[in-house]
Length: 154
Image 1: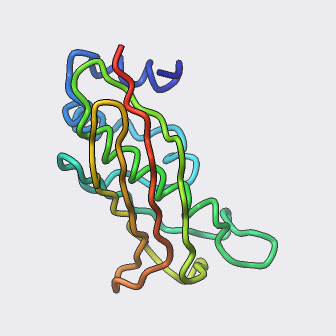
Image 2: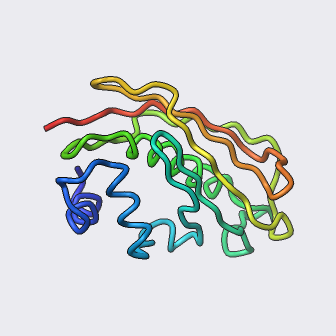
């Protein structure tokens, strides 16, 4: 695991499953890193399913006056990755190999709160596959993604 990710996991315990680690981080208010930087947090954690929520504002705009595609991609990558994280055995890790994002509708600061829901499609010994959707409070689809992830077992 990368140093920053490893240190965060070590805080909650390498002896815990991925689901237990995520729940401990959420219960301990350990929102940090990219979530803090971009203003989103974990809203739901279940085995094989994770949802992040955030409210985009002008701080994440691109030059054409809409929310940068990287904001959606980051939420979707986080949802896919943490959905896979929730299925890890103690000591296992993961990394994203590929993320494919489709943008369906532009977001602005008027979009309001959005939710990225990620779920595991399949989880194997060495690879996992996940998908995610980014929707607003009315269920309108803004972006979707599929992801291939490498499962790392020491």
